[in-house]
Length: 204
Ligand code: FE2
Image (cartoon, rainbow, N blue to C red; front, side, top):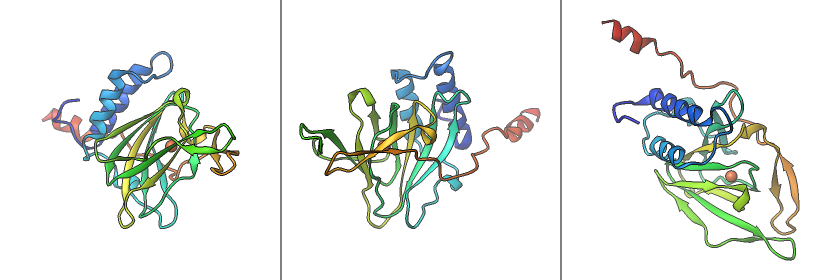
């Protein structure tokens, strides 16, 4: 993406790239998409203020855009101090990119006795870092705000309408899976389409 673009134009530009890559079939994890996503989260000048607001008790998942054919969705994940997810899966692929603060990602695998065991050491994502999720490679994890005293924000791209995907949360001790549909924290979307100022400026 050109360095000259900022704000909502940056978000709109990424969505246009993803939509082009998704046509006519499903969007897939490709180097071109990974590069565009890394570029998006490598700049912190575009996320609308309304999609950065934490909740005192629960982490927030704000929908930024959903493809009309539900081939992909983009959300901002806002962590209040010390907040964390249950252990969960996704059922669709994803990219997680850190925008502000930091988050800790602990992956899990199912052990022979059916319980879930940590898969390796937790990793920490910092601004600009991108983590890839793939159900085929094992995508069960727990994510936590790395900070007990400050808000962190990551941006997630998923290969479906993530808020409406039927997926699972897990009891770590027993390995038991329970159905989980996350929904979204917001009832409105950022308005990407009021480009009137740029059009007026071009008129001179
Ligand atoms: Fe996740």
